[in-house]
Image 1 (tube, rainbow, N blue to C red):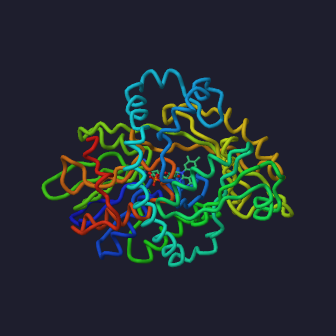
Image 2: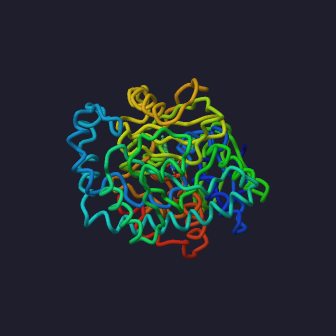
Image 3: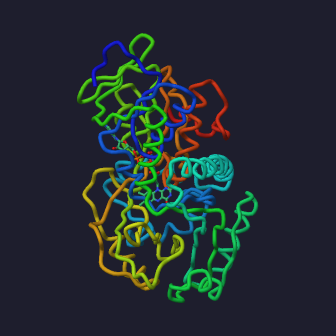
Length: 416
Ligand SMILES: Cc1cc2nc3c(=O)[nH]c(=O)nc-3n(C[C@H](O)[C@H](O)[C@H](O)COP(=O)(O)OP(=O)(O)OC[C@H]3O[C@@H](n4cnc5c(N)ncnc54)[C@H](O)[C@@H]3O)c2cc1C
């Protein structure tokens, strides 16, 4: 692509769920938009997730209960959390900031903020997936969190919190779980069905469908490596491996790669990576699952996907590009096989990195020291859920209008 004299209104960098959503929302407002990614839309983090459109994920990992779990995590053998000691020493400052947020006083406002973002986003997902001809990928069957131990108190506490925020759920005992998921073995004593949560059978395909909808509305998709962004007079020059694009506004939606591009502009973004893995297995047609299941104590999620049962692992804290370690997957796959029968792996394990800021809230808004530069990344465990409203908020802000939720808690200026 050559820069020429032509200038577009908006260039969106990154075609994960967040970037595609921002591009589509800007296009819906009549702006000329180019969406750039080195890969096809929805090929990275937005491809490999568990496909849960979660109404209830309002409490981030760094909440007060994390303190109780820390002793078991410190052994570095738990499937829920592994951490690289050398990385942890180098990033001790980030860890301290992350843990400092795990207090009741710091958690309530974040839950309220996330409730607003999630609620707005689920509404958009439900509209867009129909408009994008991908409604057949959406399951309105909820999400089952299940405990092997007699954890009724934990389930009731979670339900009380959800109720307080107006989020529906249903407590289940062993019989209730069997009635809901007749094909699983009776390993769970207690369940909490998140009734307003949906799921999809292929996150990558849904992002691609949203990208096609963006293109059909007149948006342009360009596949290229993004090298840098430079502010010139009244526009931005986006330098690509095959040329440049001039744009009035730039949206950075590069997920776990976002901080790299911003560093030369003087922004030190405290972005860490909660890496995660998945592997897919041939389903047994007689033993199908109706919805994703979160095994609370086993620390994995199992989602019925288009190509098989996808088992996703917990969190691995290390650098973004460190070599893979399959220890967590190796731990949880046999546990998952003990819940539902499935066949051999249909593909190699996949690895991704959940991009996370110390308060576990994404950055959604203007960069503090550059005009017309917009930041949209850091969505940790719930970026697939929250992509559409993030995109809609950025498009509204570019137009000088109010976002569809209170975006103040997500302001990039809290860290930059
Ligand atoms: C194991 C796992 C399970 C998860 N489960 C869920 C779930 O069930 N529900 C949920 O809501 N969320 C889930 N998430 C989180 C969710 O997947 C992410 O928060 C979300 O996908 C982030 O989207 P994004 O658009 O910000 O980033 P990405 O999808 O990573 O997109 C960033 C894009 O930027 C592009 N890019 C980067 N650098 C360059 C460059 N220099 N030039 C060109 N292009 C570039 C990449 O190619 C990529 O396409 C999960 C994550 C993991 C890892």
